[in-house]
Length: 216
Ligand SMILES: Nc1ncnc2c1ncn2[C@@H]1O[C@H](COP(=O)(O)OP(=O)(O)OP(=O)(O)O)[C@@H](O)[C@H]1O
Image (cartoon, rainbow, N blue to C red; front, top):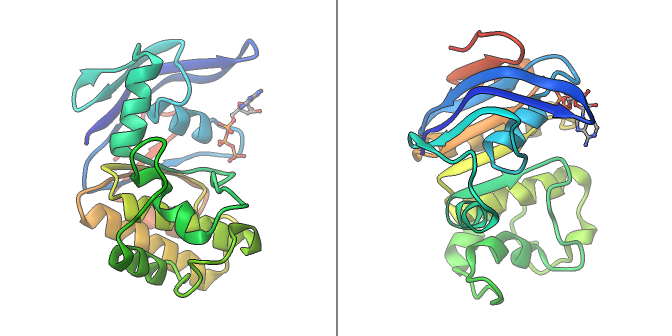
């Protein structure tokens, strides 16, 4: 899925945060949103994921203007096409690891029955093999982040939105996360990453610096 922002401006609490940002995120590519702390990387990521409305400009999905999508259409996009690995990871602590991985891939209102083989594969990919029956509350911060990545992988989402995936990880885990996101992109996924990390940025095929027209 091609995800684009065109001249997007956003003010929060009356203060301009984004001013005319344009970025094009291609399928099969990792796009890094980069810039100093507070520059608006997370805000732009949220706008591209239809989590935050824009004041000016447009958001396009496969060339279609979705800027004014209502809540039902946005929910459909999130359910059918998107996965999010955001700062709070969206983990349900009291549920098991397996439930957290499969929950967004089951029909609304139904408990996941799941595909055991695929579950085992994504847990293995994210270093959580054998832990499917543990409560998610037992996991560390870094493990919860990997759980959120396992969920995105299990869902085989067309677009994955990732906020600071390598912050607070050690070098070995940072490399694993980068490799996993690269694998998503190699499978044709549109991977959009807000990041400070030079290694993460280096791995991205495309890079957009907030506050400039610089993207390649
Ligand atoms: N809910 C909010 N209420 C008030 N201000 C906000 C809110 N969300 C973001 N901001 C402000 O918008 C600006 C951009 O924030 P954002 O989180 O997008 O930056 P960032 O580039 O992702 O920063 P960091 O690298 O530190 O995570 C900041 O100045 C922040 O204080």
